[in-house]
Length: 237
Image 1 (tube, helix red, strand yellow):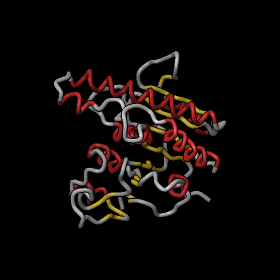
Image 2: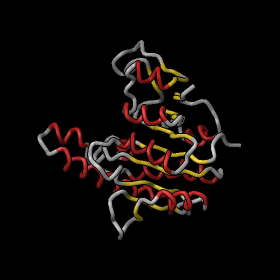
Image 3: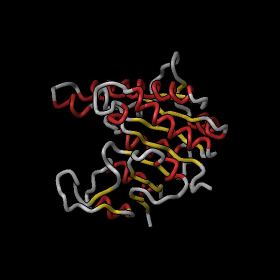
Image 4: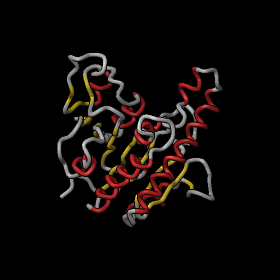
């Protein structure tokens, strides 16, 4: 039994690099195994990936680069992650489609919500690349946006080195406590920045549940879709 019929999984780009620049094949292969297990459980799953293992627009801006160009570079990094994940999923015989917000006809389909939904209904994994196709939007916000457009039941957020939402940064404050459940009002008023505030607000306005958890130990993604209480549930209630 599973708690959800269709979910969107948001993955950290930093996770793909194993803490380094580029793609770590062993890490991506393990993540592909997690997604394959969810698909095998008859849960429809779409994916949004960050690009922080290649480029982070914010950091490039701080070094003096034009913000718009920096964000587009980040979008291209995301697409490289998408193609890597597609390769390791298809090695596991999981039919996968990459759709991008920027036209890249030789390597991916254009992002078309109805086509994405049809792929999901057929049991295919759909990976959304190139962010929103626009500068100044984080992939956290893109994840919620794509989940709403494709009628997902929840967004599953994995963050590099984070296993839930805390009252403060646990790396800086040893007294920080983890929340099992939060309302959007509490998350926003408490200025809890585990994900982008725009993503929180968009999810709140549309009553979309978010679950924020860690990828470790192995099997956590399947446990979440099966209804096991892992990480932090952020909800309207």
